Amino acid sequence: MHAEDHFDDDFLMRLLRDPDELQRSGRERHFNACESCRDQLESYRRIQAFLHRESDFEVPRGWVNRMVKIFEAEEPGESSTASSKTFGWLLFDSLLADAAGIRAPARAATERHLIWESARFRVDLLIDSADPDQVVFIGQLVERPPGDDGRLVGATVEVTVGGRVFNGEVNFTGEFVVPVGRLTRGHPVEIHFWFAGALSVFLVIPS
Amino acid sequence: MDEAGGVSKETPEPTDPELVAACLSGDSRSWERLLKRYERMIYSVPVRLHFEMDERQEVFQNVCCRILENLHALVDASRLRSWILTITIRECNHLIHAKYLRRRHDPESYALSLQDPNADTLEMYLTSEREQLLREVFEELPERCRELVRMLFLADTKTKYEDLAKHFGLSMETIGSLRYRCLSNLRQLLHSRNL
Image 1 (tube, one colour):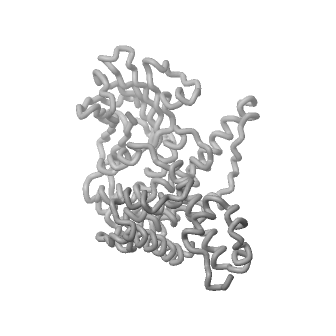
Image 2 (cartoon, one colour):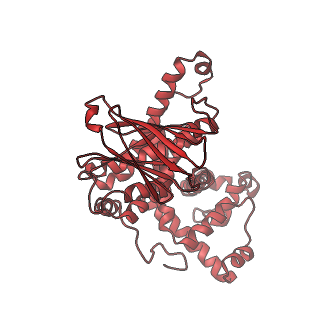
Image 3 (cartoon, one colour):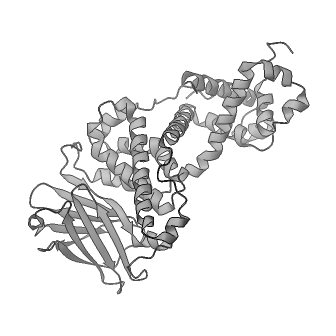
């Protein structure tokens, strides 16, 4: 075989599907002598492996939308430096822990326990749905590292459920109770803490 | 778009620095675009580390929040890919260490723990970055070309020209030409990125 008789795409595809084809075709000598064909086959193998793996990396539906919602909660035109909001990340969710077989203190059927942290705050929340028509959000907001929790007193807690907004207030120990009625399935719940100053904390509960 | 499989598209995708600038000015569509561009790269790391679904979600959420919180501090926006990957690997390592510490106090689950608290982050970084570059190459191909390449590379048996022509609603001659141009463009794009 001459040097110019490089493997064409048809042959390379056949090799991808069946490596024994090289031996059967009697073109091993060219393959061993031709760096370009070896490189091309290797490159195609990498593409094939990549395409096979890509299906494992399909991000579950809704995850990106949730993050877009968090972005949109920022005031327009404000960069994160100037933003008055602090975003918290979920540390624990008894619903997920339960599904994963991890024992959680919350009674799975009627309670959901969640813990968030942000750079400055920690929120511990229990969603009590013993009466599905009278769901109550019971939680505690604390500063981390512990600081003057007194300045959290009186902060407004705004819980948005399916477009409806319910309000509560943080007491002197950082606790708050917000009855929200019936929860709407399929909609994430948003919790917003408003302080006397410009700062606020924004949390989202996955639906 | 070049229907025969050319590289160029009608609307060029914004570059990373353009996306970052738009995000910082409050454009949520750019934020969504940024996440769409890197969602698979972020998600692939906890998947590779065999994290459970709730842990993957935690990592994904944390990484996105970190990006949002610190985007303004990104000095060189052209390094966005590397920056996000570094954040992702760091978040995964935090979680691995937290799990490791928790299990240390529980001899039973500690003995069952298979996850290495010092996972090879360099290997993870290089693999994930290489894959992201491949993803970007594919994104540069026109939609029809991407679909054709997927069909060619993922088929267990040779896909007949007649079937391809039928699938794409093209004549046999056109499908042959499309295949040739798509693969040529793919090679060209791979070469331009040293892949």
